[in-house]
Length: 416
Image (cartoon, rainbow, N blue to C red; front, side, top):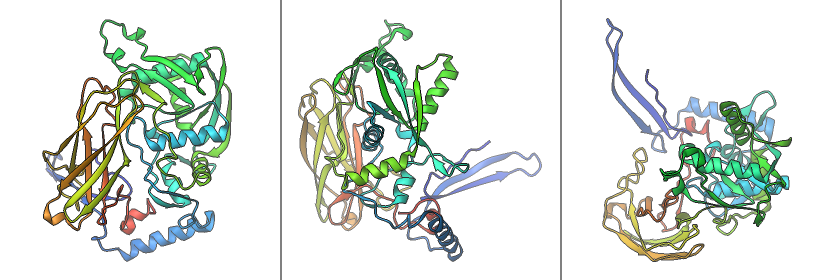
């Protein structure tokens, strides 16, 4: 059988060409491709009418969810990396709402980023509604449970041991500072069942008390994952005083962002949550300040060390996308010799690297994706934050490329 997917939010139309032998009924795939759906594709009046009709039905039921103004964000709150801005924001929101000691979330259980600018109800809904139930007209709701310090210690050891197999990588956490050594998992002299990557654990700024009961805020996706583990392994994860808050995760996020609006780079802490024992250099899109003059582009890049050990000197490369108006092949970085030395950075510290690049002449007036990447090194085993990208605007500012100018078919799934 053939499995195909044209990604999401209506960015693309998928085309699959198949040649079928009418006698044997056997087939071969001749060709397949994604067709970019953007403002060069004319609107279809019938489809536009369908979209507008659905909009009216939704607004009659839920109010002006597409155009209301709940909050603002001055940065794009993205989901990339083991410690991502969106995960940090959500877990902080869950913990504050529930008055919990600890909160968890996982990037692959969320739906979309929060894009820079005014945020409406639909922005929050689209960003955090992987599952919706027609029976109660609700998406996932936040749960709370009590776990002992010993159980939390076991849970984090388990998650850190299998994180490379989990879609989306590590958990996002709030209220926790865990230090772990990923190299333990590669030590062949230790039996697999005896490998314990977690080296230290603090909750609320204090060493974990193994006998103490802690209040933990869990989105439904994490709660179901724990249920699955219990059934798969046959071992119970000790949880007591289970409660359903009845409040949807996306509403909690919306209220939190509205309370702390406008969101900026200082609104979301990073580092000091789940930390490797070694160095851990990290790049974040909102830590890069760009400017341009024609084809010349300048970028001040902040490099953070989120690890527990001083880093060694590294290399930072800076390039651009070869086909900036064609997103089907993204990322498509140009191969250019443009690297800069990143000095040794102490644990918890950061350094600003000033960079410059010259774009091809035909890109002087285009929006261009820019890519920033750190070279790999054995001293830094956590590589998930070693690169980032952003969209260079025509005026020299930068941001993530939010879905804009989508045709009507795409608007069925996403309203920007």
